[in-house]
Image 1 (tube, rainbow, N blue to C red):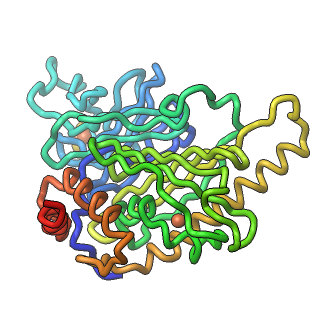
Image 2 (cartoon, helix red, strand yellow):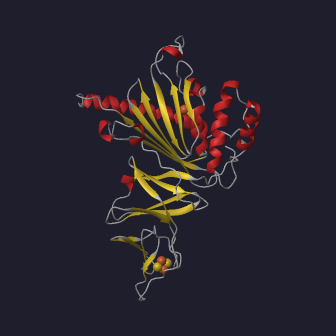
Image 3 (cartoon, rainbow, N blue to C red):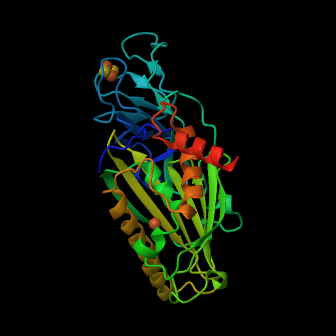
Length: 342
Ligand code: FES
Ligand SMILES: [Fe+2]
């Protein structure tokens, strides 16, 4: 892959771990957005994500840092830091250093995932991370089998590639072998959380008409980092795809699938079938990953007439997450479109 002309430091919510990877008292190391970070869970259960280096003399808190109740103690000289990254104790001085602070990140735990808010300008979150259950209403986690997961690290791809799948109707037939090309029924890119619905089927032959298809997918994109989907008219499945930049070239990809329980059928056979179906959904996603991880961002792209509206809308929408201005030619593309429609 060529390095994309898109910022690898976009604004938004991004997944950095799964909740069950960080138990009470654990200190978890990770690298995202070119920063060494740690996540630690206090005795109260509260999770803090902060930059990894102690503000005293720079020890990496992920190597020997210890959770003491509700603070984190540095392994080097025992200074203690709280969930706001503030120094609360210097063990050999009667008062802490109130001025120094380790950078912390807004964090939410949702759908078994740990999301942090990242913004190079340090702004507070201006939208919510999507919730795969609450945002679609009605059903809850109890109505589904446990989450099935895929984790692929440091792939040469950009989060926007994954989101662009949501307007890319033509790829379904070729990458996912759908019998016919899906049709989009909703493209709503008015706010930082966008909505894409489409009619799709994985069954039947290529002779069927899209008007006769009674199944589809609804997607909610919470910025560039997290997309949740819900299916209808087929095996009840929900997915979360989360792509988080690691450095200027690579991203970690996490993909999660929930398969719905069938009321009154909670036997082992039903569960096995659900697992099998979940594995198939994950396999389909790996087909996308195979393309994305070798793709070069085409900018401006050569588009078929029917692709123009969707790609223009999503690239214009994506601009709001690049405060450093590295958003490719999407802004120009959007201007061309506006001129066209006058
Ligand atoms: S470097 Fe952390 S206490 Fe000294
Ligand atoms: Fe896809």
